[in-house]
Length: 358
Image 1 (tube, rainbow, N blue to C red):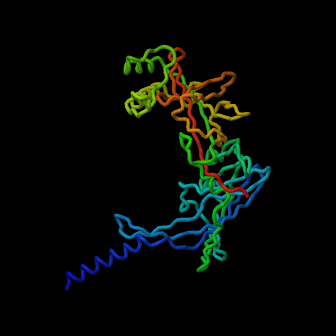
Image 2: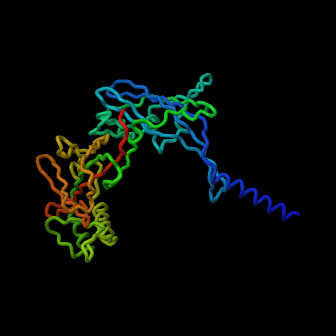
Image 3: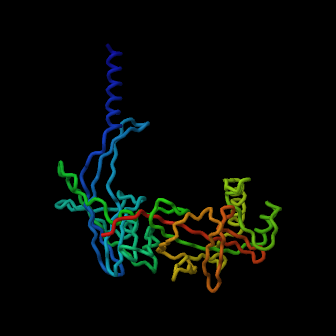
């Protein structure tokens, strides 16, 4: 009898777990948020009611599991000068340490701590509410504190809203700016409908000792002229690109030597210089300094570029026009042995799906 009882218990446990594995998510209470922001000194209140869900599943360590998720955490609003502000919850934000204060009568929780408000949200400022050409990204404290910052989060509230049984439409649903949950990649993706780009440039002086160590490590490199660091692809016998990790491994060794033997001092007086790309009239201009908040620019060219060797990156630094031919066999990183300089060009793409305009 005891064995039969044990078997029945085990079977019952598996049945319960199995039910949870295939059990659909169920509606939980809702949360109503108010986010108070200033853009160019003008105040706005953005309100959003978000549906919460209870999820069910199976965890290999704990067995039957129960979790929580929320609907559509990206929302926005048209503001002055045909701009739009888009708000997202910061994924790394820890609300337990933020110091929310609750009004016992209304049940409203308020967060007004200025330092935590810079961590609670990721903000996008679109230069046009329908067809943005430039987006400012506030995704870190330094961006909110930058002298060029135009956005400030001044406060936020949240309140639990009980669900109404058999009424599934209490939440605000998808927002018109839901698709601005931008994904950063190094490549243009085929499935995305809108593409934005950012560019940066960096150069630093390297010492004679650094050059000597590079040549000692790789004697085949000639310490003369400009040397372009190798990338992770090579051409095979039929003219197709294939991966080659050894090339990147050697490149990594070279950059490690440069970083170790020619570091950027705190007060370098021009030893290391960063540039941020700014697009003016279709032309990329490199502006000295790490400019925050980051700006990304709309691009119409949606053709994947990575293996396109006919594409040329073209930008201006001061009065000099620099051209870099795209080639997956090489990185956009260079050593000029004659001037004893290391410099690199980098770019990133941000993508969003096409969304309905209202």
